[in-house]
Structures are given as structure tokens and as C-alpha cells.
Image 1 (spheres, rainbow, N blue to C red):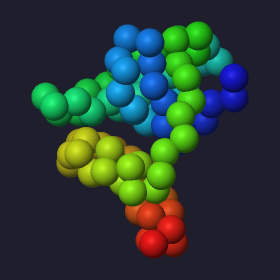
Image 2: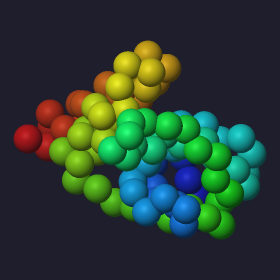
Image 3: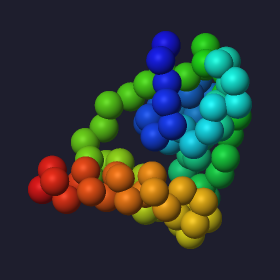
Length: 89
């Protein structure tokens, strides 16, 4: 599976969408996940990840709920998703 930073995923452990933020190696990735308790970082093996396709407004909703920590660390990624949403509208 070809995964890149910025891809939205679902993992076996968490059945909610998240966004890949770092490739540790070809087999492991870091991703931000959001649930009702807030955003958190997970490490997942490639065999536990399924790439998912979301509408731009869904992507924006996810990253907006991840809070300042996500925005401060991944400003460029946040802006790319925001631009996709604006163009989509």
C-alpha cells in the first residue's frame, strides 16, 4: 500500500478516521486521530492501516478538531486541506 503524509486512514484498533503525519519507516506511520476525548497521536503498522477517502469538508472537520497542537506542528498540511475545501466549495 502506498501511503503518504496527509493521507486519511482508518486503523484496525481505532475505527475512526485519522491523518498520517509522519513515516517512521516503510512499515510504520504516525497519525493524528480524533475522538470525543480529543486528538492524540498513534503509531500504526502498515498492515493495520486502511486508506480512506473523505469529502473535503470531512477532512477539514477532522483536522479542525485536532486543535492547536496539530495546527502548530503541521501548518502547511492544515493549509493544504483548507485550500482543498475552499476549491471544493
